[in-house]
Image (cartoon, rainbow, N blue to C red; front, side, top):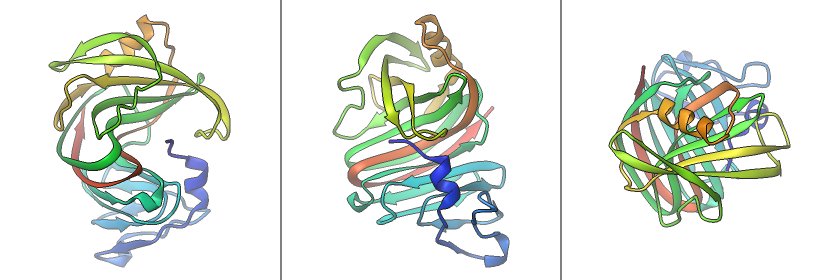
Length: 230
């Protein structure tokens, strides 16, 4: 359930473009291509599309397609990928207000979240706006609640032990804010969650990437999301 930058850099992407000259191919030496027009991505890769960072990771390179445009992505996935995380946002996140809209249509276990990482300490975090037939907080330690952007979110924490991360196999904290009333569309004031986590002793570090992500685990579905930030 993590997007692995180390794996992304080593994977070559199968990308179909409206204009092939608009993209420099993803290679070991050039892991972040510059996209000027819509691209269809079908294997794990990262890059930028007209000012927005994108990330697509899947456990098995099968059954996934993500179209990336300016400030928008459309993702379809199937259970053959096992686990898939895709979305757009920023190569370096921040405590910003993120506004999004679109559709999220999972069949099975899937989440729609602001997703990202910090380093020193290493933390993986989710601010989950909607999910499929499985609540991702199941079995996690409930820390409290935070009210923001017209809704109440339950806050959870867990420890991932010897798990894949953006820094290789590590042990690290994973933080969640899960909205009690699901929605697809609105503004996520990330500072509300970061401040609430801090007040509960859930320390964060320096921001790494931050995306509005769709994640599917042993499921299928589609999403089409437009994103903007402060």
